[in-house]
Image (cartoon, rainbow, N blue to C red; front, side, top):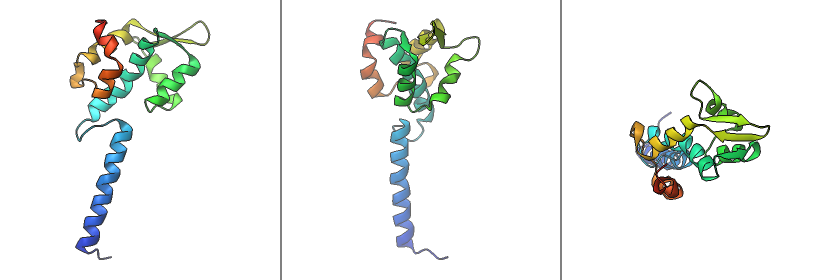
Length: 132
């Protein structure tokens, strides 16, 4: 199959536009921000729990995860390991752990080379101002 230069250019433009849309959905602001997007997604979940008082219902936990692009089953990693960032308390309650709070603090201060995106800085401004 032979593709003319004009067709190639058009396809390339469509692919580039589609990639930009996918990056926006993932929270990636520019090429090379995959690490930043990963931490923005993960820490954004924990920071949201902190903004809501550190404890949320199971239903709210699922909503927060979905808001950040997680499938509900994909949030199990927050509860895993010795240094889990979330824990289940009293039936249907989910609480951020000390490890989780420390991770959010580190993220907001740029640890891992992944300072939050501007939209996150605005949303979590009160956590920064309160010197968590």
